[in-house]
Image 1: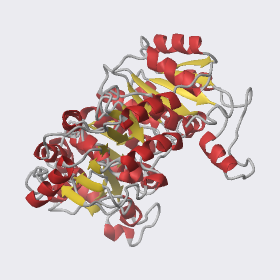
Image 2: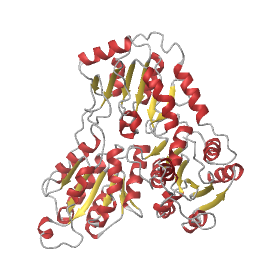
Image 3: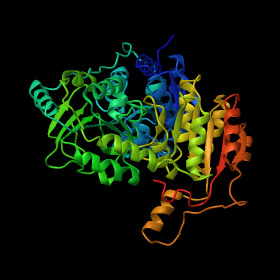
Image 4: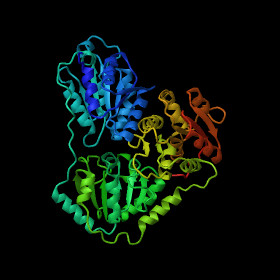
Length: 537
């Protein structure tokens, strides 16, 4: 049987741990899809390339399966730019396979043809165009680049004749990856001296620690040395948020920042553990004062310019923390971290009979402890990320670097595909669901019984709040209204799911409990008052 270029591509991805590919077919990728199928990758048909990329990411968070997105030339590639940019900013090792015409063909045939690589290079770690005789080598390079250092998307353009043609080359080699090591001894000793002398050390951790699986090492280090921990939203759960030393997620809520940034300012030593400030808002720029010592544990050189690092330590986070163990002196003698933790609890408790606080508190009480949740971008995400405690990493998935809309439902679908035994709950605003409603059909087609909670307030609330804060007129942010907007419950039923409208805690709790026993997706439209987020975060 003849081996094609598509076969070699599929074999390379399978060796690297890919189990699924997501996308929408076009004539230029038919051979490519056949090669993926022959290598054992399950192809999942989605309704938009954007949703396919997020489903691939959701699966990766649950299983570690290398995310693969497939798009045909022209409009397929253009459709996927958003999710590829998200993978770049959210550090997801997405392999983006695109079909293209051969170079000679492109000289005289222009229908749907443009330079894929030129468009994508600003938002990928690298872009490769496969060539006969070096297909396996090209895939090995692409995969290694995607998973090394800070993970990120890599684009692979596959000419039609490369995918369809016979490939007379050795099987694809396994991708080369380098295990993280220890920083130089001199830098370690300098960091150790700073920590030994610290009376008020504080740790910040983020997405790089999640991707390295360094949560247990960070939690153990903080506990044994009496160091309180703040995380980014992506880093929620690196330490169980029920732990007294854990101060939860930060970076988007001004109310939380007003509590946490003064605590950061009181620290004499700041230990950054895989902390990538790409998630943080402007208040976290240059957040460390001149008298503080900043130790930065990172997998690669930092060039963000967001803050300084006095002692950069490039290497494995868990290994480096093991080398920084020391006899801890008494720390934070005046109890400032606990005071900050108490203030955060009070700030986001919420006391209204019905509104977003009530929705999140009710669902937290109903849903089992190991529930995986996803959050779309919008006002609800900021409040939810402060209220919802995570006992472990990757239990709240969201777009934190790019902060794009229409991610929550496909992220949840991918998570359920990868962890079918776990309850999965997606939180999304009404505008976000309307933007990506087509993926409800994907949930039905793939038999993914997730729960979707839509916060219905007929507004782009976060933008409307910014509009008012800048004393601008209300413009382009409101839509529909009671009796005029989208009937989300009917929409869910039209796509084969169960839909319900709720207006109070009791009905929300009943519908959520029933959803746990249902074999199809459930959409609960939680109708909340307009401007319900005012003063919430």
